[in-house]
Structure formats: C-alpha cells, structure tokens
Length: 102
Image 1 (cartoon, rainbow, N blue to C red):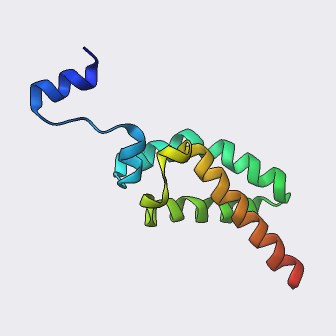
Image 2: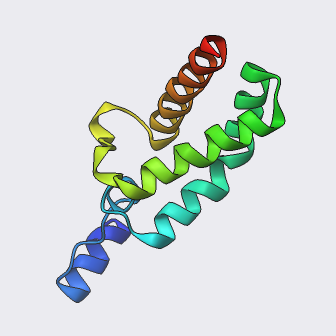
C-alpha cells in the first residue's frame, strides 16, 4: 500500500498531490515552488534580457501571477515549472515590446 493510501485509510482524508496543492494556492506549496525555481527562472530571464532589473521585475510578476490565480495552473498540461517558464517568457516578450515602443 502506498503512503498516500495509508494516510487516507488512517485518517479518512486523501492527501493532495503537490501539483493540486499548488493549484489550490496552498501557501506552503507556493513557497516551495518559489524556493525550487526562482534561481533558474531568474537566470533564464537575465539571459533573455541582459538586464538584472528587468529580469527581477519579470520574475516577481511571474510569481505574483501564480499566487493571485493558482487555479490557472493545470497539472494535466504539464509541470508547474513549465507553467512558470511560460508565464515568464510571455512577460519578457511583453517587456521587450514595451521597451521597443518607447
């Protein structure tokens, strides 16, 4: 019997997967997502922009988007990491367009 099944059998409550905890906006899961991913995402943003300030802003906006609307994340479509890279990539594109239009 798996650990999740044992917990459910003992308590009568199913333990949520990490992805579902993120989707429901559980604070500890969101914190863990940040701790696991912020450095890699920042390096990606920095490589894409060449600007530490722009990379930091885009990274912050990425995590704010997840915290404000965690239900947008769909574990059926991929990992939370891939979801974050998608948000970040789109934000970086938007920032570059805005910068170009100035």
